[in-house]
Length: 175
Ligand code: ATP
Ligand code: MG
Image (cartoon, rainbow, N blue to C red; front, side):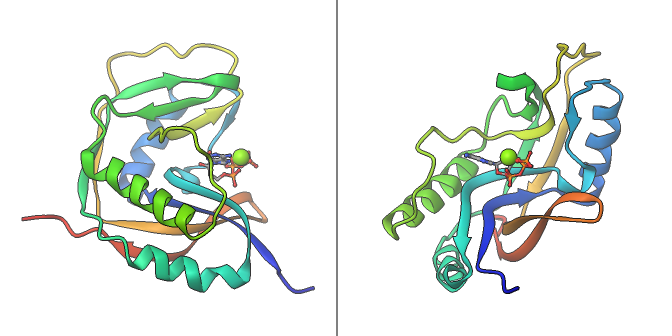
């Protein structure tokens, strides 16, 4: 059977060290619900949904035209959203992050992609369908420098859902 479409999204990957640290901290919160697998921790920039494989060349070309800059991302806030979604957010999302997501969104929309029109909400999902409000011992304090963005294929393997990085583009860090 040949693959005709892929579930895709643009996002920021996490360096292994930060993913491991967030995983340990998150597991200590006993959130319950459905925790996001450590290997899948990420921040979504633009969700594309199911796309024909033929569009991959175009997506690469469009993403390659984005001139984003690197930035430090501080995750210092625990957020509890709808359907028991617990995530890490930023009290001051960097301007370069907002611009990157906005430029990607605009460029994809101009190319004819149908996208979510909700305002960009930078967040890193920790768990879904949590039933209790987590109790925190102090503020979360995670940070790393985002130096690339990635086109992910949302798929599954023998361990369950997995986001497979297909292509990445650099986000140069200004001196
Ligand atoms: P599952 O849907 O099986 O629980 P998942 O949500 O981890 O798994 P996807 O649904 O493929 O996997 O989503 C990939 C990423 O895109 C996640 O960060 C998810 O929150 C985000 N996402 C999914 N659907 C949308 C949407 N309609 N709008 C914005 N972001 C979305
Ligand atoms: Mg989903």
